[in-house]
Image (tube, rainbow, N blue to C red; front, side, top):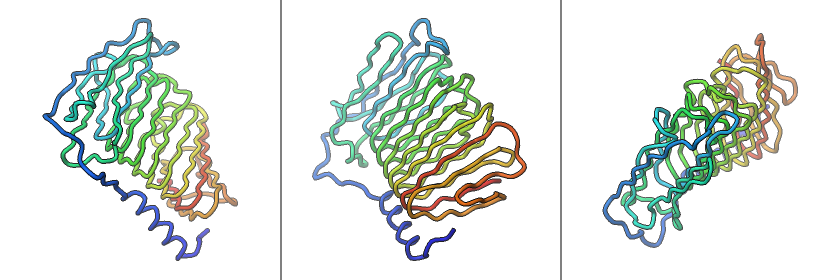
Length: 286
């Protein structure tokens, strides 16, 4: 279902522009020597899959590297060179928060240091990440996630689930702006429902991994390029709605109106609803 070439060129140009815009402030913030905050937070008592810990990470922007392998709930370092940006650590019951107040996060330039390097432990946890303009790599494979919420601004981030989540996750939500986002191994996240909302950007969602039950995914994008990768052997149904969009396919699909299905696959159903305001949608079954 191809749309006019001229319209598609406009869509691509707008998406590319949205992902490349940077904001230059009138002046650099006052930077000083780089300081390091050591993070070493033990898990709250009585944590289980039925009563998980709650970990909230709030950063204004910069770089975030997160992975499994910690001996505590969360450990690692935060490097920063603006004194007012020292993160605050707080605990209340089963909740642990590491948060940073940044008033002008859009400036992040070559002189500014704000690097978070964190390792997550093995206890069941509900994880919330709130970030501004940042670059990140989150390797969450094998982390016992009972819930996951990520929200960010103009970002470039990769989120990977290379190992199965050992506990069930009812819901995974991701909200982003003018960003380049790559999510891989999504079925290993072991969620029942996923909600992804994007603004103007390039988004790639790879649904490889283990599917144990019916999974529902809702994708809403205003202006952007979306690639959905579904491996061979996954029983998938994708329904497309929205305004002006161009859908292309790779691999083998059955197509009926706005519904696309994989062929010859059995097992639990991966059901994806995609709403695109303006943009391109590529469906890959390989």
